[in-house]
Length: 189
Image (cartoon, rainbow, N blue to C red):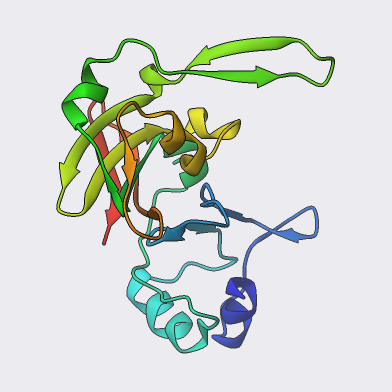
């Protein structure tokens, strides 16, 4: 859809080996809502961000909304490489965030194709967790989500209770890590 919108808006992506220089930021899981999908597009000709925004916006369809176009220096790595953390807002659950913060281990079992069983601790991947009205807000290292999803992580959190029909998961932001090691939102809605 995004590549079609570029063409329809009169913009031409740069090509590398015959393909558009284009990548998407880390995708959310199928069972998660998301306010932050990111795309990196290298154009064949320079255009200011405001112009790109105006040309693309009318052609963004299918339930997507173009929030912002940001010009980044060519040497900057792709968003998928910059994003270190994801911030989730989970409603329909109740838990004691302090209890989770105090845990040293939150283990889960991985069964490899050869039958080998291994236990991994996901607690170091939880950067932050806070209680909010009707749920929790949690910041997770993205590399922890390569083997398990947020829905599975929720089943492992000590003392978490599902309320009503079950948890609703919204990925609200992707975060990068600044020079001081502090996560900052790439863009947050």
